[in-house]
Amino acid sequence: MERGHLPIMPEEILEYLCASSPELVVDGTSGGGGHTALLSKAFPHSRILAVERDPSASEALSEKFSGTSVTVINSSYAELPEIFKTQNLPLAGGALFDLGLSSIQLDTPERGFSHRTSGPLDMRFDQSRGVPASDMLRSRTEKQIADIIFRYGEEGRSRSIARAIKQNRKLATTDDLADAVRTAVRGNPVKPLARVFQAIRIMVNDELQHLERLLSEMHYWTKPGCRIAVLTFHSLEDRLIKLHFRDSEYFRQFDPPWMLPTSAEKRTNSRARSARLRLGVRL
Image (cartoon, rainbow, N blue to C red):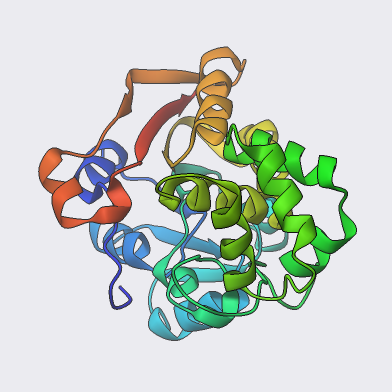
């Protein structure tokens, strides 16, 4: 796995997915390959499909898993039905999705994902397409930005923050955005900063739309009994997955339907603190 990155809830995920010996297991958000490596070791006789939307991460994964049973595809997990067709793959018997950012993204300043590092305000998973966050924010009205921050970041001070963002005429770097947030809130700005950066990242990458498509089409590439494990990090995505596993005609919730990291893991891995593991089974 990449330096500085620890896979979240590895024991719980492997215990859940290893209930069978599937022909194919999907890691739909391979990132730095931490979970992918664990799956490859746990399923030595299975094919592993590693999907990664970020081209730079995908390239590193291809080098890392060259010559193994892992097939790396540079794409969004929303494209899995097409990937299965073009790769002529069998139906999956297990799948994992880690919806958090990897340290490849967080620790690379020029990607613009974190308020803790200085860099261009970009935030795109794939920098070869789409519009950087800076351009997107300039083109949005104050009300549109407030709505985005309120909906995707669940931040109550969205209006004052949006006003401060529009008043910052530079808005070219992560520092510019962070300064705008700090001028709009009183007290400790850490949580508002995290919520605003999260909201804008979700907007830039259409993350909820990709997740909704994944869920609506997941039955096309999974076999009956396929176990799905999803690591969520905020209430919007967690609610979507919960409702899908509860209400879908193709899936049911596992018992228990969700798990949390242990206190010990939270102490040793800061990324685990806001994580929740959702569990579903294909009918």
